[in-house]
Every structure is written in structure tokens, then in C-alpha cells.
Length: 392
Ligand SMILES: *Cc1c(COP(=O)(O)O)cnc(C)c1O
Image (cartoon, rainbow, N blue to C red; front, side):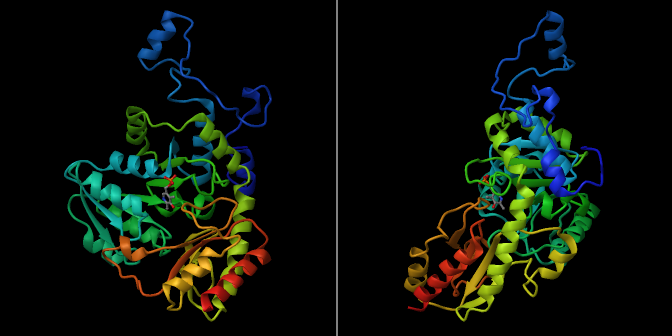
């Protein structure tokens, strides 16, 4: 099943990473809670010390629930192998520490997730790594910013908050020509919506906390690795002791089974709501790469195989207390960080606070919407009432 190249994503998410024969016939890999693994003989123990024992040696590394999530994820994304860690942010930080060393330069997209940038400023610099930022929409800019010691280019497409779609194949070409690796945060599209490795990415990062978990109740991160990058990232993952727990991997695997249908529904409803919003007089622009006519749509259409329910809405200039009244009164779109769960969310966001290379017009109110799995008509009614409060 897993080796057939022609299976479709909906089939893959149903079947990857599980083998009932290994688990009393159970459909799903159960949660393995184990620390100590017992050896029957001294010979087995000594083989383990030499790294030649074929079984598991300790619960921190290689419990079946964790391994099954990692292998399912890797196959889905076209990675050589994957590593599961306790959060999306841990996936980002481990990938960066594992690929850059003191004296190297790391080139990061200006549209990166805020905590990615904070990690670069607060920790990578402290470790002697030089960091600078590039315009996510300019391949020429990436070329210009490459230095002799640039070892890592970090991408995120679409970008956090501002949703710039990057020309990943072209950026990969520039990075590789200069001897650098391309790391990409692929959280928005998931492996179903963006085949990172087929587009030239060397290390992919996914906050499974978002759509993979899908139910707002699990933090988990995945690092997809190419064959060349896997050994050193696996080494670091082992040395740092940062494996995800079996419980969390179980929930991620459970989420995986419905990822395809959920994303379809998120995308359909988000598109319907985006089209509706565009027609409202209070709305200046809808920034949703999957929406025909939106910025980034052409590149999205060329490189992506899917979308999700997360996008941005630029409002026409309005007094803050009016926008606050709109948000305070929402019934279904609730305010909160994170996204990717079954429920709809709305949040005032400020890309200008975490940009140094590109400009963002901070004068216009800007909202990030996560369209959940609720009835689309109910969601539009909630937004419609919100726009009434905005008008005052
Ligand atoms: C949420 C998010 C992360 C971090 O995931 P956590 O599991 O919350 O640490 C990383 N990248 C992007 C793009 C995200 O939206």
C-alpha cells in the first residue's frame, strides 16, 4: 500500500503509518507508554551499546506511535524521513540549529512566523550565527543577499500574517547554486497542499499543532528531511532529547486520517467567505492565495496542490473602537492564537511589527480569519453582523 506511487492523498492519509498485524489487529497504532525496554541477554545489551541491537533500546527514541507518525508524514510529503518534536516552534529551532553553525550566515524571509524571527535574533546570534532577512517576493533579492558563508535560506510560503507566496523552485535554485540548504515552514498548505521536496526544499517544517492535529488539543511539530540532511538532524534530535510524546503522536495520527476531507471543507468555505467579503464595502482587500485575482494566486496555482482556511482581510480605514466592537461581538469567529482546528477564529494582526525589509501599511485595520468546519451560511451571518457593528 505504502509503496504504490499512484495512490491519491485521501487514500494515503487513511492508510499510511499503521500496521494492524503488529498491534493485535487494531486499526490504529495504540499509544505506547514506555521508558525502560528490557533486554533478555547480556549479548542483547552489549549489541545495543554497539548500536547493533535490532529492537528499541529506550523509550525516548523509537516508540511505535512516534515512528508511525514520522514515517506516515515523510511519505506524505515526499521526504526521506521525518522527526517528531513537541511543537512546531521546536521543529523550526531544531532544523535551524541542525543546519547552521557558528560563523555561518542564515538568510530568513521577512514574512517568517514571529517566533522564528525571535529565535534567530535571541538565540542564533548568541551562538555566533549571522542572520539577515529578505523580501519574500524577490528572488533577485535572495540572490543579492547571499554571502560567501550563507549556509541556510529559510522560507515560509505563504508567509505568516501577510500570506506572500514565494517562488520556492527559483529560491531553491539560488540557494543550491551557492551551496546553501533551503528550509521551509510548510504549515499553511500541509504536505497535501504543497509537495515541498518536489519543489526543491531540503528540510520542511510543519506545525502539526495546526491542521494535522486539527482539533485544537495537541502541540506537535514535524521536520521532513532530505536524504542528505537526515543524519545530522536525527543526531541532533537524539542528542537533545526532544522526541514528541506517544500521546501527542497518537492524536496527530488520528488527525491525519481526516486531514484530506477537513482541508477540502476548510478551503471550500474559506473561498466562499473570501468571495463574499470582497463584495462588502468595508473590505479593501482579501489576501488569500487560493482566491482568483488575489495577490500570489498565479504562483499558488503553479506550485500548490491545495489550500486551507486561513487568510487575511484588509479593512478600509476605520476607528479602532469600531473594529473592536466588531470583534468583541462575534458569536462564532472567536479570538485566539493558533489555528487549524475545527473552529473558526478571527484576530487583529500587525505584520508591520515583525518586518524589517518589506513594508506593510499599518494604517488600515487588518484581520486574520481562520474558517472552520461550521456551516458556511452561519459563518457569513456572523461576519455580516460584525460589519454592521463596524459601520456603527
Ligand atoms: C503556529 C505556527 C508554528 C508553531 O507551531 P507551535 O506548535 O504552536 O509551536 C510554526 N510556524 C507557523 C507558520 C505557525 O503558524
